Length: 415
Image 1 (cartoon, rainbow, N blue to C red):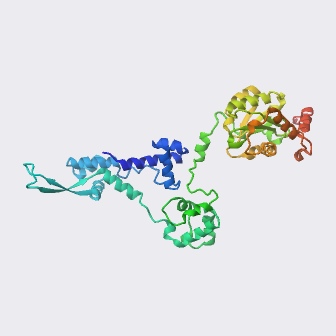
Image 2 (image 1 turned 30 degrees about the vertical axis):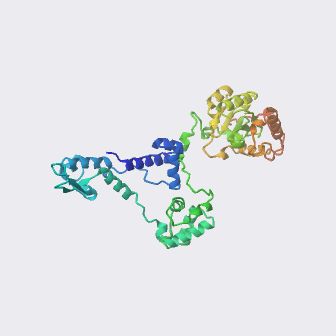
Image 3 (image 1 turned 180 degrees about the vertical axis):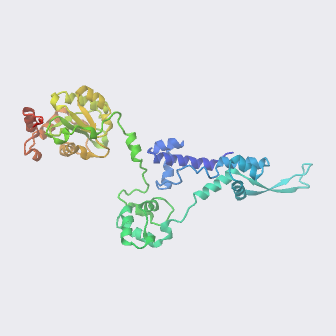
């Protein structure tokens, strides 16, 4: 027996479940088996806030399959006890389910001769599984009075603070401080967000979403940290926690930090390498592409110009442009380590250098138009600029000094 309403709810449930597990809108729509336009409409209608329970209904509740078997048993003339035994459920469960969802039906019986003479009306009752399922789902997802609707004073307080452009999290915590003895004046920031995003709640003005820092009227689904890290994880990468301790001391040359600076719409990029001890800079020319293959070729070419003692380690973030790190290590004998996600301070020297480079490569420009000669010119300018951190020496001078007088390894002294 068809259950179109139940099918729709299952599709919506699969959609929100996929979003919660880290899928984007298109992937979640494919998981639910609907068009992207349909999935986007679902999001707009509920402001990006989950519309129904994502979890599957509890096995203890009567489901659609159970209701179909109840209808079959009633048609076959089974007793409630026999139906309950078939479903492995108490007889009282079957009795309550049937009595709640039985519908009165009146049909007419035509005479034996096919005429309407002697017409008689038959009164009986019928149980429809699809109708019972729809009624149960509507009851489970019925609109309930929200906390702000039930407490106008709290809603007015939140509304005034949103007008002051306080964030929902700030409001939730300040209410606990400003009203320490009034439990009814407490609310979670998640409740405030739902009141702002979900249409039809009415406790807060609809235009107040403009007071949020994002200004969005629809909540943007965010994947979980684990799903985000797993989906963007580079195969075989070695974490920065396994990097040798000598890198932190900056006494030994040959330990590099790297990244890409990107142009307008991330359509172009330039690779940046900076040596930790001396702040010596090298730039990678990427005129046509900045994917894994292009970065590998430019990295191998640049590192091959350096002596072996200047090729020890490289620290990079978890960008996909370093997917070929194994091939780079094999070609250059350079050990590559990856920072933790969203931790730019773990390669702070490179971040600082990228800020200096923006003087020559402004944000929002097309970086593919710069020639290799110009990149060499910019690198020379930075390498011959006095640096406070080097006691006003230049990176080129510091590098020459380290190469001429390499630090001597510590010798253990025994009594």
